[in-house]
Length: 217
Image 1 (cartoon, one colour):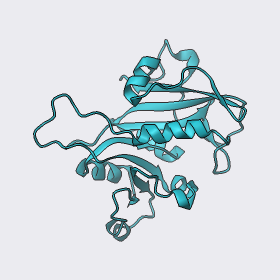
Image 2 (cartoon, rainbow, N blue to C red):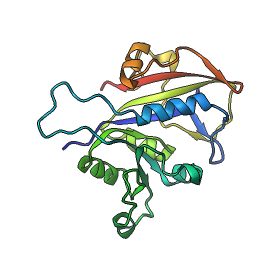
Image 3 (cartoon, one colour):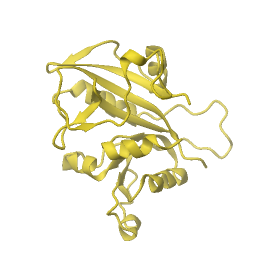
Image 4 (spheres, rainbow, N blue to C red):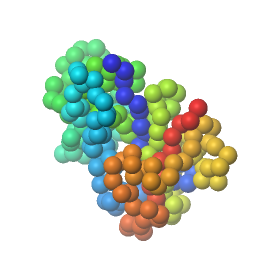
């Protein structure tokens, strides 16, 4: 069984800033967070011609680094309704063998490659990489990474010290972005399985919009 495609899901400023001092630069984006939860939980529809041995996947997976895991309030760990996979170089083989057995995890591995190996052996719908910057960077180097679901934070101009390691520039849509193209609103809706709000949204004084980018090389 092949591992599923990887989709990176991230909120970033126009300059691709994603964090400051270990936290999000913005607060109060409840609707944006609800979008993240819906999209990462929603099981994709079955293929039109499934093989006789294929079954419906039980869960999607969310893959994250240890710092991202630690940033989740304990009462929300693991993220419900998704298989949580946490990557840290400090995770030992014994820790991985004694990982929580519950369907939601967390499963602890010491590399993104080990996470993919686990997904290959599991019945997983979609696999999302949710941070942080180092894990995003590693994922962007893999052929399995095909898509970025980007919440582009339009205003205000938040000061950041951590950045998403891929420049998806709005002023270069027609010329390409190093092999990445921005998809249409209709394509975003079809992939996520919902009617995504169009154009600039505003919450708590912060404006943002939802985008989908796909690799074409």
